[in-house]
Length: 210
Image 1: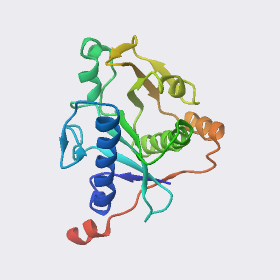
Image 2: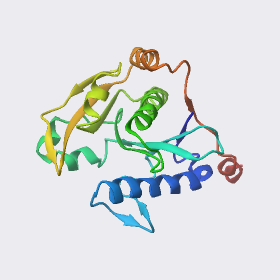
Image 3: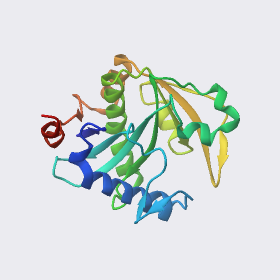
């Protein structure tokens, strides 16, 4: 299951979010050599904000974190314009367009197939979240490994420009149109039979407002 975490229920996921940032540090900084901000053993940047939505994949509510991804509104500063400054005028942005970034699996997960098996539920979770929150488009930067998977998984995706070098890898800007039909096609192709997201209410937050 995929838990939707935003400013309304974030207080209930403090431990999971800390694990997420530690996983990102282990995978992106220690494993991939990214030069990004690290604090107290956690990877966290200026886009981990109050208005950021996180999706956390777990087998059970009390179980360990398996994978995560974040969604950032593009009406304000977002990562794509930093990665593609020369093409920033061509990248869609606006209140109903959100950026997806930092897909990360737990560093204890071994094997490309195991990581790929978590990608499909995450994609379904991203689409469900987008429909729930009124997002019309999603944008993201796909590296060479993710690009063919994300362009041909059932949703309506298109390249936003040419592929660019990124260190030892390549990245391509991609946009996805959010539709119920696209979600159905991804579910059918990868055997996800029903809605996979959960959006828990944070009782602690409700009590503070009562």
